[in-house]
Length: 267
Image (cartoon, rainbow, N blue to C red; front, side, top):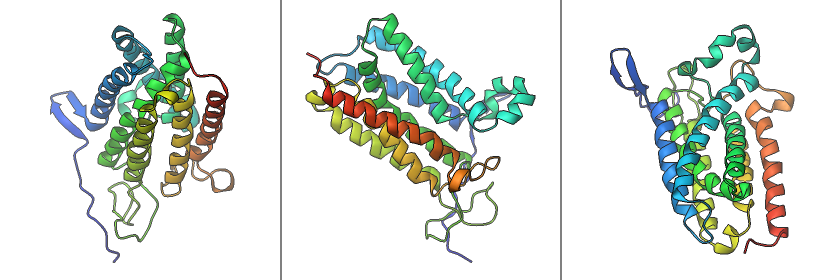
């Protein structure tokens, strides 16, 4: 039998009081949004300032709606369109799980753009501040995926393989931890180092572009170790849905980087 690391079986429900239950996954969303809100406050206070504190407080509401609505609709359209076509009311059953980062990203982009226009702010500068904080939520979300034993990796014989409760008896990559490291820790550090430089902060869209391209590369890398969604499997040429959805992000991110470097910095 292959040597594996025991999977730390943790109850997905943190607290249960009668019919009311707090799950680790929901807690990850709440804590991620709150920590991200505090971090956006910090980066927005650096020269040149991006938003006031009151505006950042309002932005939190817009971003929360964008994450929830976009994430749910993205999962519905990208991963299980046939199921929800015949069961449309289940789209609103978010407590059953099913969120898409790519859909949530679209929701945040739309919400951020509307918020910026309503408040007379530069959308790309607002986007830079939000992008710098997103890896916090990504890290917590992937840890919650690991606790739930979902989105596990492909079968492997590496020494750190784990047998997941819903993944059968074979050892698998703990791909949720790979994603937490790449999309969360690594991407956060890169964006933090960039935000420290004032000449970069004065180029709207540059940090947002680095985030989009960096996330796309990190996600594609992790997808080589992650088990494809059971209802989709491998798509064109062995690609997964996560890979396909990440390619436009890389292209958009590179375009934003080139654009930001060509335009004059904000005064």
